[in-house]
Length: 181
Image (cartoon, rainbow, N blue to C red):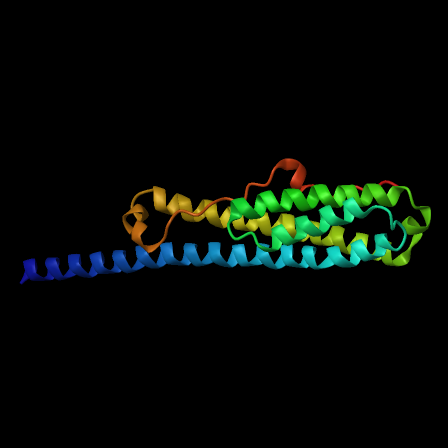
């Protein structure tokens, strides 16, 4: 009788451990997916601002076609990026193109004073901050998941999720574009 209770107790504890471990890894995986979705939302918001910004600058600087084309191309590449590495590379291209666009704006005093341009610039700056926060949240979720999958006892549940890839944008890509008036 005592041995039977011990065996039943052991089985109950083992089943509880399996359920807890599996659910912990799955929750971490879902957190990574949700965090990635948040990055995509913020990046899309950023990319949606770009056409308005380009159109505003175009009105003042019609002969700067190569800059506009670079911004448009970088935006298109960024919208099609599917993995964290591809998104980081595309985001770096967008940041560089935006720096060029803002450099063009330096030559046009009327543009720098335009309320549309200033509003778009402020919105872009706010969005850059949200993107940075979303990246941080995503990377924290990835770190947690990858730690679970690499440490005992949760490493026993590697089948429930694969290690995730960090969003590792170059330092200059994560900075808010600077515009000096």
